[in-house]
Image (cartoon, rainbow, N blue to C red; front, side):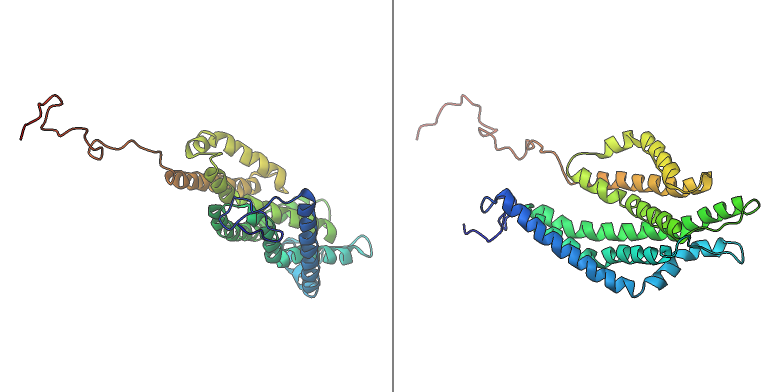
Length: 282
């Protein structure tokens, strides 16, 4: 079998073509990380051209519920500038994410089995779709309820004047939290395929999962009211139930080996002849 330059596994997957030293792995990892950083830089400059418009979209849920005549403020001169820069950086990561995933795949792909390689791209696509759904759910459903609660709670006592930097940090944290939470079925799928969890174990852990869902919602949601906590805990519980069904169907593919039926087992002797039957002479 021929050696491939920089290769760590054959096309059959899982079998090493040649031994690669740790230094070679580190050099390859450094080169791919540099390419990822360069792609993020390109994505940053592309996103910076639309950063003002993106910031307006991000601020819209809060701007709708603020009292008339009020708006977001900046306590320091460069606060808005750095907020726009951070927004462009976050968007640049999303823009460069396909190339980042490609570099990650080129680094770990040769060491995967053929079946694992077939699972990578569907899993990556599903993760991206679920993450986008979670972020959209937080933006269109949770943000209006949560921000309205804060504004209505303090409207009679103080004037709401949030800073653009604090709002950006809160909004991005919540969007990332909802995006990761919505990837729960994908994570359960991989754990079930590896045999870490099963349909029965997930059903047995259901009560604790509900409790942990409400604890996570209480920590991650910006408001202490029950409505907004339900808006986060509800999807977690629903996605956990979806994960149970995912584990059920994944588990059905692995059937235990069964003994052959009597009809399939060839008899040792003819059924009509006894074992001690005398031999016939010609």
